[in-house]
Image 1 (spheres, rainbow, N blue to C red):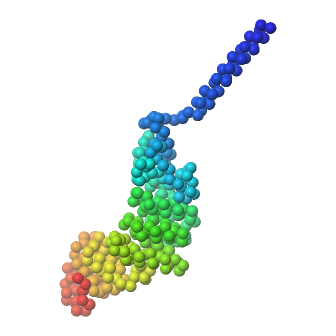
Image 2 (image 1 turned 180 degrees about the horizontal axis):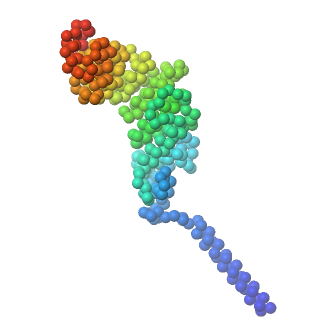
Image 3 (image 1 turned 135 degrees about the vertical axis):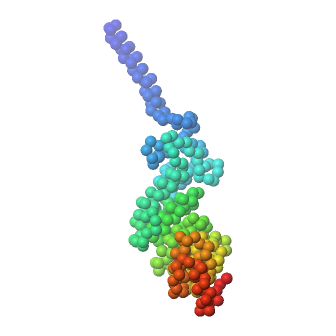
Length: 321
């Protein structure tokens, strides 16, 4: 009987010990298993890195997750993970890096590049082809047009332009009205190509004309719109290109192409003057333009062109000054 009592007591002690160990074990499981090497007790979130052996740590207290532009979910972040500071409007959070060399903006650039690739878009403007099979990516790329980083905005604009999807036209037009010079060329090219569709032409041409005629638009943006309208056959007056050539030379190739397109023989002397101030490696396009306008061939020699023109200027209309 005494031995049985001792055995029962032993079992009771063992059971009691197990009951005490279970909460401790559960508590151990619930506790964080990984601690930030830089900052303890700061509630840091681990951000997966696209590079091997890289971990990004972001302080949760400083960040507010945006609603996903693609699915509308608030509890998860899509492939374009976007955060913004709780105290400021800039979406640059404090990022703590462990074994990681690149910064947060590089992560966004990498992700938008992968999204553009997923849409079937090439890295550079490609010949006309079929539309993209990923219209579901349009809301995400449209949201990236508002990113604070210029490179992200350009990549997103390039992606939308190359997708050649009707659904991409409204966000491109909205952005074009308040666009910066970085995105203007990509957006104008995408809108111009979508204008090839009869059902979209009127809307596309109206948007390009509106931005072109806005006095507040930058020169670069107006030039991109003018070239797109010219390619669509919707620009009746070429004075903008001639007047611009007298003021701006750094994008003379676009202006010269337009001057030749409209056969503006009254701008020959202006082209010769532009050639005289252009480095020799960049004179080829100017020489080609003069050959097309005059039928003569003096190559990249502004002196020879000037002497010939002075001797034959009576054959041409009065020159624009």
